[in-house]
Length: 121
Length: 121
Image (cartoon, rainbow over all chains, first blue to last red):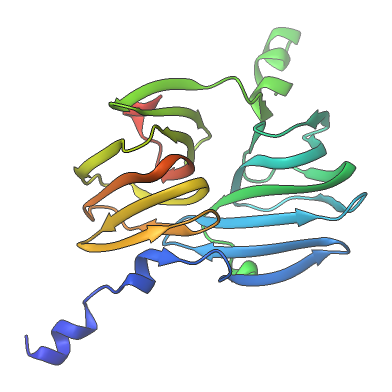
């Protein structure tokens, strides 16, 4: 292995650490913005909800879990609805339909997907 | 399918939603406590660090990503050290050695593992 091979396989700080202001940004529904970071098989998606914004009912093959960081979300998963507060968590198996609405003001959540959602890169 | 079969396969609110105060708790190092929630292939681990507490250098086959929720962490991954603040993120491929120390007071982080860490159930 020559020096160029060695450099090509050498991990850098950017491989391991991603600053708070970095990441891929998408507006996925009106008033709902995400900022994502992809690992190999895990994707983080930091979601900000404007008041009364909503993610409409949908499903995807990826497993999704997450935690509410601030505010309140009215979450419907597989036909079951619950209003969540900070620190509450969810786990949605792949293929299960779900919808979310911000209630009582804005909200922030951290979603996690496995595998990577290519549409959020 | 009789009624009992139907009930056995019917998801409940507890399958999808986990309250903030629930979850499996472990003290993994002195002053470092975790509270975990397992999905199918993804595990969330909410980590609280007392001031100056540390997770000693180790590795595991699971991929690990995470986000700092509060405080500051001095994170070393694969020999690269960086001091992180709230919102900063990390991604650690399986098998890469890493260590963490809380600096400037207490800290809270959300770690994510794939697959599930059976030792944290």
